Image (cartoon, rainbow, N blue to C red; front, side, top):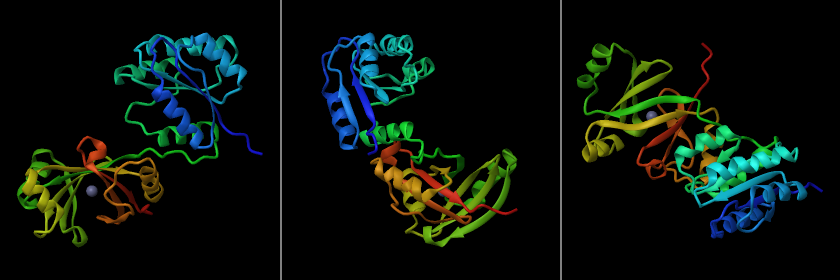
Length: 274
Ligand code: ZN
């Protein structure tokens, strides 16, 4: 029988609320993991001791008290004393973003913020423990930044003359009702997007917001899998399946609600042979 992943969920420090920790414990159980919960107000030494005794695969620390900067590293220290520093430690709770780099630097593997879903947490633990799990692929680069313009010919000279960038091509994407000017910029591009007709999404954008940045496109290797992962994580998407985009690409849009009002596209370009 395959051994279940064993997770110690612990709350170091003095805060007296464990609703969040209990929800997480239950969510991980729902994902087939064995969860040991230490209860409230555990010292770093007690937590490290419990982790060793229970032979867990990973430790999840939750802190709401603001003492994470001292308590999380102390747990690592106590693990070291017990020759158990190879047990990965992750953290969550109320952790201000400015503290995250410090905690990572101290040896905490990852900090989950209040916006993280339990789905993402479970996937992360799975991936951490089981090397056969397919990891979440990071986007490779900014493929392009889409800029909505009323008229490409009128807007072009800033890019090609003032900035001195090269216009690579102009293409009409009938399915999107848009004419696209591709302007090379390092390994990325700027794309000027001009509406071809009144039903074009770019027309609607211009009427609502005027000219300006329309979307940011991120290059991925496997758009189909990536899109499935996003949907599974509960990220709101506009396209549930990839669709053809400009320049022999497959594209899909993520809903701006998922990203602080920014419209993100993920795209995959055909590998060119030249
Ligand atoms: Zn685009």
